[in-house]
Length: 246
Length: 246
DNA sequence: GTGTGTCCTGCGGGAACCCGCACCTGATCT
DNA sequence: AGATCAGGTGCGGGTTCCCGCAGGACACAC
Image (cartoon, protein in one colour):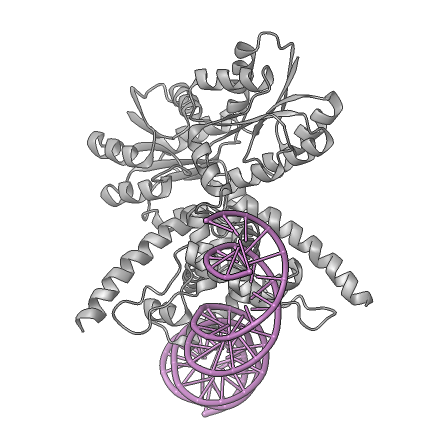
């Protein structure tokens, strides 16, 4: 059995190496990668089936790396090991995990024992192991109990990118009014409204304020934004070509 | 001589402890704090004059902690030790460093030797040590060569918070038109303009787009936003009281 | 069939925003 | 003294946004 470690911080990397060696004596090869791109390459070249992956890395972060790895071999087992349980990360992972794949999400603050158990459960038993702190949010986020629907989240990302209603409508194939309806739901769910209590004109710019709220609630983060920006630019190029030739 | 270490990651903390012991044999006491609040308390109680401080911590980050520490004892020497050289962090530190204070900014990716030199230079010689990567941006950011002026940056933060032009004007004691002038400069400096090339109506919402650009360029980050949000709420309360009683 | 819910769409108005034009101030340079 | 430049202000208009009102389409309940 072989394990690949993808983690940019040298200290954390060697700690992980140690932990893997201790938890999995049946493991005879442990390789390390310092960023997402290198991780993808090693996973492909050596056909790793067990990977421990950090989330915040640059230039290529863990979610993007996991996406391409899973696209090539959907049965790869990946343990995500991260500092934070931001909703943006949880949602990002839920988007890319293939059906039936075994994966885990453990916080770096977890104890050695918890990490050991997770390593064995995922790589040996092919179980899913999600930290409780992460699990709670996952249900809130995916079950539509209080969270955002898929299209709402897309529109939220689009206004975070700075698009106009009209462009969002084009991009998502909606009418202008529908986009604005989504926006109103977003404003409501984020609690964006005029705090005007006494005087007549203390106001928020709803659109910008919603993005701020989303950031403060960790619904969005820099990495999500950067990824979305790339997608947008790529879409813009395609779209320009279409309408340009028409 | 005594040194205080403020760092939330246990691995990094013990590595730092080791490094301090090795670099400063004349040091007879090393204490550790796991977050900003505890760091402030220890610094106050034990009158530390030499502190190594991580930047990204929660709930109270390194910049906030350093601010209160420096407010109480401006001659404290602080070495900031951080993963990133984001413009938001550099600008945040430049705002709070007292006149003549000795401080340093070293990246976590720096070699052991570089860290050792920085420790001795700051704590023994009271020099300022700034990593080259950080230094370059500092000049761009503070010298107005290509960067933002103070008021421009304030307005940028305000639109990132989702305020209307009118509220910004009130808060910064400007006329509405002046705020809009600042905004236009911001749009220009961030390169926000209509990418409309072929067809007539592909557009950005300038205001939101500017915030996005600022995030992508790391001019703003979550921590800055959270801090600014607190300031805003506090100002709102004061302002409401004033206009309410008027 | 009738009710209830969710998602989509068009119309129209009032507010906020983007921005060109014209003017004033104060500071610095030649 | 004249020139130049950064920063501040008022006016006016075209555009976008926010959002209430008034519907259609589809599903699932009673």
